[in-house]
Amino acid sequence: LTCCFPQLNRKAAPGVDAVNWTAFESNLQENVSHLATALKEKRYKAKLVRRRNIPKPGGKQRPLGIPVIGDKLVQTAAAQILSAIFEQDYLPCSHGYRRGKGPQRAALELSQRLHRGRFRWVVDADIKGFFDHIDHEWLMKMLEQRINDRAFLGLIRKWLKAGILEEDGRVVYPVTGTPQGGVVSAVLANIYLHYALDLWFEKVVKPRCNGDVMLMRFADDFVCCFQYREDERRFS
Image 1: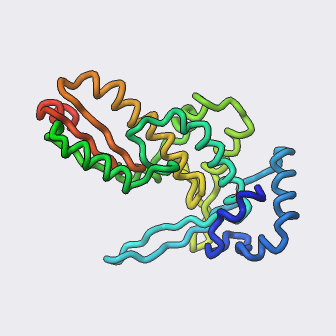
Image 2: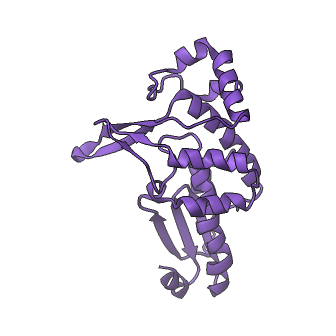
């Protein structure tokens, strides 16, 4: 936990406890010790996530979740554990939230494959509202494929179910979606799509196609390439 602390954004707004990075850092060892003890004794509870609505062009707003520093710290450690476990399972098509990968790497690889001339039909897609609509029970089943530590899985469930403190003072409890503003959210989303999209494309879509096909994905944005029109039509 101590090693994870420098990875947190020191300029981030504080959560519901009003403790920012600097205040937490001023008493770091004691704060980390309290967190570690709570985790060991199974007394750890996820705090409410403070929600702020950020104005967007056109009058719309983007909701932003702000967890407390302690929850961010534990989530950072959990994200590292999850990444280490699932990195060996991810398929080459997955470029999101992985070391040595990224959108630039995905775009370069996609460009190189397309320029070879084999793929003539392309489907460019993204999953609308993906992060807000992830099914909690399916996500937990996916995690259980590789993790049997009930305490660790319990942490994930606590973050998924953590209440959200709205700007008007109401507290709402999510039934779907990744943890609001959570450090671990991106990793959980990538694991979900590994099973729901990547493996499905590899094991179901590919065998049914007559020509070469390819999937390239960064988070919930993905591109599917097909050699033949009829394969693209069946997929679309």
